[in-house]
Amino acid sequence: MIIDNVRLSLLELVTNKLRAFLTVLGITIGIAAVVLLLSLGQSVQDYITNQFESLGTNTIRISATQDSNGRTDSLTMELAETLKNAERLPLVDLVMPQVTGNYYIAYGSNEFSVSTQGVTTDYLDMEGRSVDNGSFFTQADVESSAQVALIGTTTSENLFAGANPIGQSIRIKNVVFQVVGVLNESSTSDDLVVIPITAFKARLNNTRTTTGESIVNTILVRAKDVNQMTETTDQLTQVLREERGVGTRDSDNFRTFTASTIVESLTSTIQIITIFLGIVAGISLLVGGINVMNIMLVTITERTREIGLRKATGAQNSDIVVMFLVQAIVLTLIGGIIGILIAATGAAIITALVEGFSVAIQISNIVLAVSISACIGIFFGVYPASRAARLNPIDALRYE
Image (cartoon, rainbow, N blue to C red; front, side, top):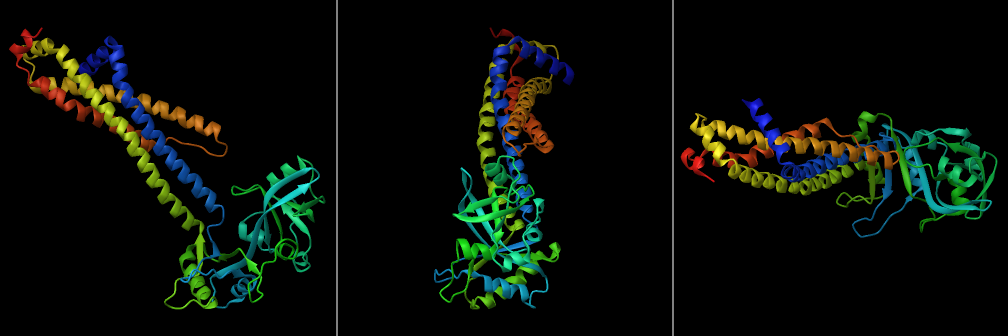
């Protein structure tokens, strides 16, 4: 019986193509929007997670923030050295101060604004990077404030257009530095210049506190065990509070964050946005469902005599309900399937247009779409189907 009803429903669609198209259109748009937006939200979440986890899952980044009085107590080289040698931090493996700034760098007639970082020889270990061409600067270079630099692959291409940059001289803020290496490609940033932190301080920017201590933007700390990140962060926070003179009742005048901290924060935001967009897309499904109900009511009016004939020949009310419910479900499932195909096409287009980013249609979203389609068919088909079942067979046979 179900198969016969499905066959009759498909025949009805073929007979009334325009009506069927208009009925299915709302469901198609709604399902396509829901599937694509949910998959896009998940893909963005995965992309951001991968990006930030590449910063190092066992790396803690410290930055200065305002205290309860609105005053910012800057981080310093001296503080980084204290943390590096602190016996109270047995869970800490590496400590590296970092200074950053955007400066124009030039080679010949090529000139660009690039993020310039002053770091120590622990940079490669701390950031999980390597040198593809040339070599990293040495501790002797740091101690002598040598004017040497490593550049990212994007910076190398922009400045040298494929030529070998090793040994070439570039100008950073009109200060000459010799390129000694090219960093490997990274998922975070390849448009950068890395120089010894002492050279940065001596040649580019040597800001100091009122007491003469050398200011840094960030202090990076690497934990020995990635499974003890919470313990390491708590331990580090306690030492920082003591070293920076934070009272027991005062809030921290610094912030510690890890890749997981950033990911969790961004994930929550993305999930909220995805839910909101899903609700907006769901409105079109509601409109599509109402359209299905209207079309079903029209269909019942057109098939009143048929209903009367079926009931006069022994069809039960339940048979009439099933007949029209099946038709409603077939309509919405067809719309759902077309919507899924449109969503898959949209995902493929986004993947092709956006470099390094891919949108995958999740199986769970497909199952959700099919389920929603069936539920819409049942929900918005129940009233028309029950109305058809309540028709008096004699009155239905007399209907013109």
